[in-house]
Image: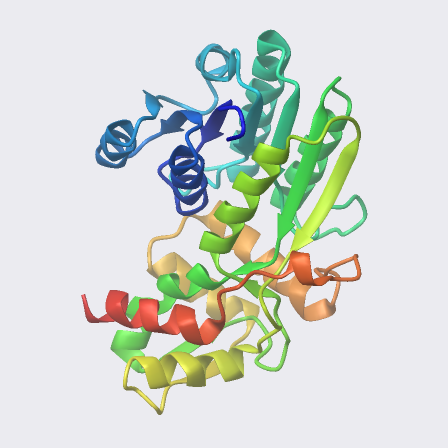
Length: 299
């Protein structure tokens, strides 16, 4: 049996971090779980994790969680409750870097994003990811930058719209093939990289789903799963999309980030840069995710 190792997981109660933590615990590893959902943390504690709660911009807390870990899972969280998300991501990035240096961590798996390269021009949040990648690369440690595609779980954000209007609408093109990926698959892949803990160098790993899917096709797949075969996707203008998001309570900064990303997808600037091989494709199809979404939709 392989030797048990110690891993520190940021966002251990989120969709990606929780899967990662659970898989590592099942393999007998020590997990330090940092998260915000106390109930989910207690569940991880029952499974053997050492739990921590607090703010991700607290470098002293992060250093405590990271200290002695063989590898760390880190990411820049999207903060929906702040006025300037990009500024907050920059603060968290500095806290992570400071903590990694203090804790002498040898290896990091960093959750980034497709499109996190210098000249994309797709908005502040991707530039934050790019800058964070560069800061990590400047440290004396091994780094794997996991750049996933478009999350299937984004459909959860449209549930209220579907229930009220029977349609999905946004500024994204209906005919755009999106590299949709289920967050469960990302969590499993992160766990693999943490266990491997590659030594030396900086690796960029783009990760997408089994195949690309347009939103027009996705609406049909989801519609069949929720017994709403008439469900369709409609592209609306940036202004109309912005009004809808603000009406639903999203802050202006988050709204702008989403709209900027949508424009980058539509223009083709937001795209994979690698030749995608089989190991870079997750297992969960949109049809499989749609069955899970149907359970959520009925609740």
